Length: 404
Image (cartoon, rainbow, N blue to C red; front, top):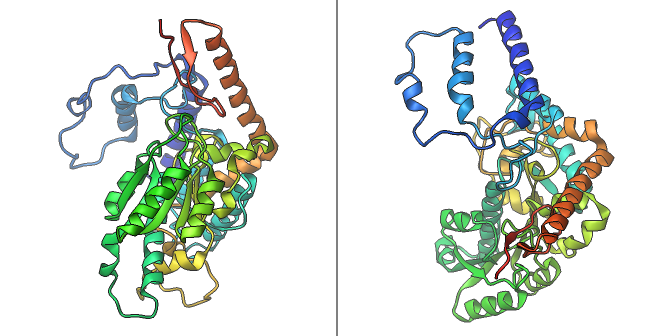
């Protein structure tokens, strides 16, 4: 495909996306296909010779598109809707057009510094204190990364200046979260070989801080080493907000790394009237949020902040002559801020969306979503066949058939 062919096909795809989004409400929310539907429709083997792009795209429309679930459909009520906006799409197009990799400053000075600026914009918009920020692929990756950093930091503190090998401490480390926390914390614990205790919740779905402290004391008395506690602001089950202040104070008393999973709920803090749900966030050593949950930024837009960048880089840095940046020690090298070396350019879509909507436009959008949720709850409560069973603080509401 040459430049002019690319130009023509790209215009056609933009028109296709625009028309698809314009008429998305006419599409089925759930694809009418069964598992294994696609292999019989496509070639069994990769073609030996290239094919015309028109033929490829025709196969996409006729064979692949019917099996795609439109997350942005107005009648899509599964999970959390995926952020989608035209400025975000354009940002993704530009990022892929340049195919820039963000791992050392010198490999992409603008990409590195734009990501740093966007992390500051995003953090301030949802009222975080100034912290070291980085964009990751998902909230699950953020949680795993922060657990690894907390584990490394605890081992460093225990070893001190001694030569004791880390293997003496690793089997004793314990992490804590609530039973209603996102299951990615359990996956992170498996990957990192960290024991995890899931703490019971109260009748509102919030982690019980008294049971957390009880579990910590019991583990210490058993010779274990608490190293990580994760609270959730906006749980997946019922959008509950853990008491970050009470949990943060416990973590400070026992010198435990305190992480907040704010993937969903912290985005609502763009509205001043909802920021009281984040009381105690200042205690956190790390926080993650996902702009795709509420702020019109397309999927793959998870953000992670840590209070101390030195601890983050010490835990995740590795050296090789082909990536060492010798030009300036003050440069940000994002390869040391996460698991991945090569990272794609995620900051463009943040920049385009933030500038296109502005904070006032994003607040208006979030407010409209919350008002729609309130209206829905009102209509459900007016029908005595159903009842709402959670505190509807954001957009997530739980309904059930009223008991007879």
